[in-house]
Structures are given as structure tokens and as C-alpha cells.
Image 1 (cartoon, one colour):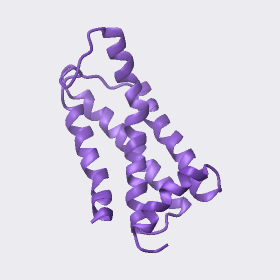
Image 2 (tube, helix red, strand yellow):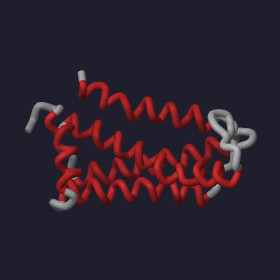
Image 3 (tube, one colour):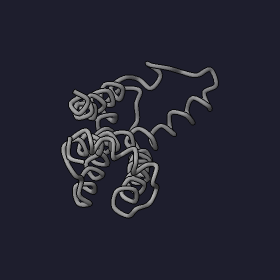
Image 4 (cartoon, one colour):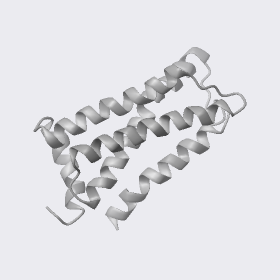
Length: 142
């Protein structure tokens, strides 16, 4: 059951991203200080698609051993979804899509990719590797 929940999470998260991107920027929350509100929402670009990439990796780990090539493909997919989301936002009233937002989306993915690839394939970040091994064991293969 655990592995199926993990496998479905990236798709649910992608749906959440799509839904929230289709709403005005202040539909869910708007902080009283507009500068702080804008800063936090702009900073979330660094996190949002990094989370998507991590969820994709966890889902892949429950299906078997993740290769370096597959890991890169998952990062590319998460970056591509960030670009698609920016295009989607460009059609939503009261939303904007900018190249810098797409760069921030990709930066979050690349940071997570670096940490995970070093943990899984280069023996670095032992605690992270230990956490990731939980998802490998969820497959029943080690």
C-alpha cells in the first residue's frame, strides 16, 4: 500500500500545481504586507518543482533501482513541467509567466537533483541516502 501511495503522489501534486496556477495569486492566501507576500510567493518557485522532482524520485525508487540516466530524465521532466506551468499561467487572468520564474523552478529541481544524485550514486550525504533507501526497500528488493 505504501509504495502505491508514493507512486501516486507526484501525479496528485502535479494536479495541485496546475489547479493553483489557474487561480489568481491571492486566491489561497495573501499576507498583509505585500512585499513579504510577494517575496514568499516568489521564493516558492525554488521549492515547488524541487518537491515535484523529489516525489518523482521517491516513486521511481519504489519501482526499483534508479539509474543515473533515469534520475536525469526525472529532473528534466520536473523542469519541463515547470515550463509548462509558466505557459499555463500566462493564460490565467491576474497571473504572470516570466523567464525568471522558469529559471527559479529549474534551480529548485537542479539543487534537489544534485543532492539526490550525490547521495544515491556518489556516496555523499549519508543521512539522505539512508532516507532514500527506505523507498528502495518499499519495493521489496533490498
